[in-house]
Length: 214
Image (cartoon, rainbow, N blue to C red; front, top):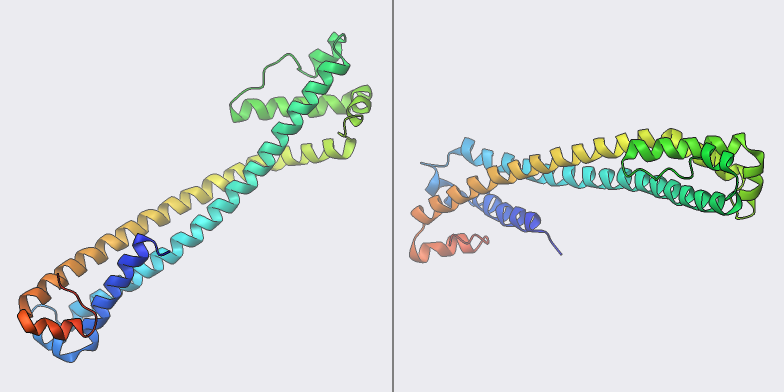
């Protein structure tokens, strides 16, 4: 299904191309729309098309970057919760392990806070072989811990990439809005001009090329 922008573009294309393809129409409105002004319509049409393509590209890239960040972020959260649950069970009476693994600390809701806690927990696992041994009983082996540490190392970059791509998508969206505002203003004026120069039965000349003035 076409978006409202695609529909607007298509209507504008039919109008602008229709006028430019029929010499009689061009001659009739020439006192107002000379060649330079008609060329401006083609330029605005092209800019609108390019703006749609650019926004689609930026939106896809932003979506991919955001997805990549959230996948790693959510996986780390999941592993962290599982690790803390296991340590509470296996070391419920070992205050030293509980303290060093920050088990009684709540998981912060802010990014920097939870990331710091996750790093502390992963480093603690490496320092306590007995913790590693117990975690392997529930499927969290040394390789998984190393992967979590690697993911933590790249998480800041993934977050930064997602923010940058989202910003670029927003800029592209604003550029598209501006391009279509300019195109719409041009087409409104062009239709008003055609309405002035083509009346009654003369409108058939416009309708032959798909131009509807009103």
